[in-house]
Image (cartoon, rainbow, N blue to C red; front, side, top):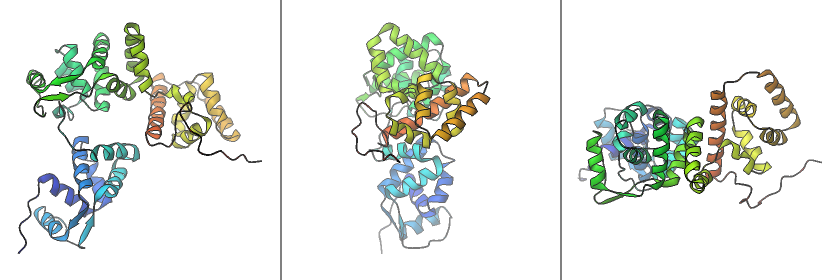
Length: 338
């Protein structure tokens, strides 16, 4: 008789999702938070196949569907299929990349599920140094929502301190956890905080334009070289000028047309010219007509559209679909139609 197999709760959840298939699992993922999705994705990636006996055991325990088939595929492809259906290609790609790295505890991970308002309230009475430590260890998207809730002076101070953060002792982090009444998971000894200019650049890449501009200007006033270093790690909408024509054409195929109209409406003459040049004559004329009709557009809507386009460009750069003009090696020539 085969020995009873012991599975963790996480393993059982992963087996269940793999048995249900990509479409159903994608619907389940829509009701989970990022941390739960990341943990399940890591487990699914590690499981190559599910034995029929294990599958039957899990299905029986969860009172789910009756077993069918002997093997259920898992691995990276399955995880990618589920995530793309649930969250879209960009977010799925990020989570898969995280999942393929060893899963490890992170400082302040218990705050990841808290609302930005809750986190801001928890940090309200803390020093800028502690606020910087906590914010730098949040997911960039979450940190980008918390930072704008701080007073302007605090934002500036916290941004500078994030850049100077280094390794932090686990005992010190534990004391901070107790002070802000949050549960902290960390390994013994020294914990390497995700901090420094790269952390701030990633946060600013995801925050609103007004906060981004405020922080960069304040850093520039104190340390122009540091500001330039952070700016070099970011990729903003205005950096479309750093792409060659072929890359811009690829970007224009990916972006939402309403976003493009709003973004171009708030663009400089240089960027407008660059975009028009990389569209067909008919498409360019149509866009110009739309801009004439778009007499009024809220700056917040323009900023949001430009930020979404910048996000698309960052994803395409990360995926290798496009490259910066100054570092790009020409691999093919665009054929001219005679």
